[in-house]
Image 1 (cartoon, rainbow, N blue to C red):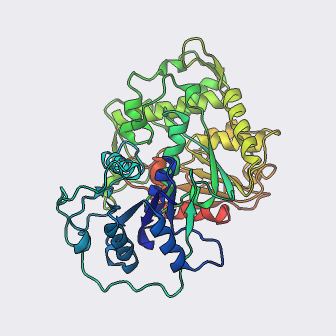
Image 2 (image 1 turned 180 degrees about the horizontal axis):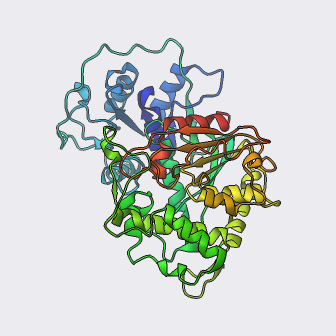
Image 3 (image 1 turned 90 degrees about the vertical axis):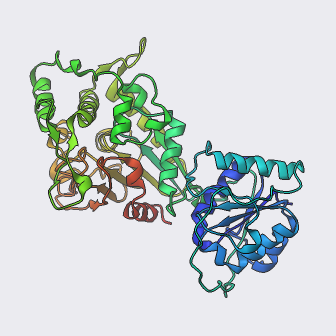
Length: 482
């Protein structure tokens, strides 16, 4: 017998999957019409699973309220007094179900602290333990707009497969692996960061890694260059979020003791990043101009400057293998430490079945390229995606020589497949040279695919926005063989 039967419309599959995975993670057995072994009749499997369930969770949306399949399954839940409705969208459910209190998850994107999710979990627990024989019956606390009426959906001519989700839910076969490496600014704990990236990738009908048997790991290096971990609210590299993570004046004093070629390199790079300009200057995003998106307007320098200081420091410390102490009693050689961590995670990924794709963001793309091109012990990967990458900046290319050259910059020794470079033209970290195909050729031939994936908002470097881009997701699916 299954604990929970989840009823939903197929158009809401990815939202349903997010909830199914979360319910399964709580230790409950969850049934939904995922993938059923061949040779079984769809209607018979549905009926058997529905009758065996202790609790029916119906997901209401504009499409599901029109579905006869969903209505019938919800009716079974009402008849047995085990129905728990959930709003995926703010709609009026069919008349029969309107007086049953529902959890409103219309704005839920995976946050375990969401109050309506907590209430749903408590009610499910009570129902499964038999502590409550029925759900509270009253009018919903929020009045929802009446959805547009359309003809009722007909039952599909070709039945879709179904699947029992074990406890906890795990895909039967792994189909591939992704190694992520994060970019500039401080970060929350590694497990939180990885969860946030995976959720962003699967949000709003995107690529659900678990459902496709894709495992993933994160190359985490924030603690090498920063002190205390950032809180979870600073996980997204929004402009204001990153600024909050720099609560004390940034240690620009690291530049004062530099000399010779190292000082010249830093000073030239700082000039390109406008770090030596006046305090009252505004930072115009690359390519911003009148008559275009209003969100492309100049960014106040007091907001932009901490990011550019961070970027310069992080790039310098890595490329020059600087010594740095982020906390008392800890001293790192930055390039040595980050290389070691990257190689260790790549070695783990190399043991996984299926394609191994390395996805790097921001300055993490520099670290990834450095290892693939310049470290002979680096494991091979099947594909590389760079996102918001500063690899087009000539100051960085100069420090990657002699292994790097424009005509032979592609890391073919350890990259077995494609390199896809994703950028927004207004991403200040990617810079004016966001397109890199001509800068990293393979035997004087252009082989990298440059993709302009429009971001949004004033800060166009946010990885969570990038991961929700349809072109990036499509390319990643293709590289994983999905």
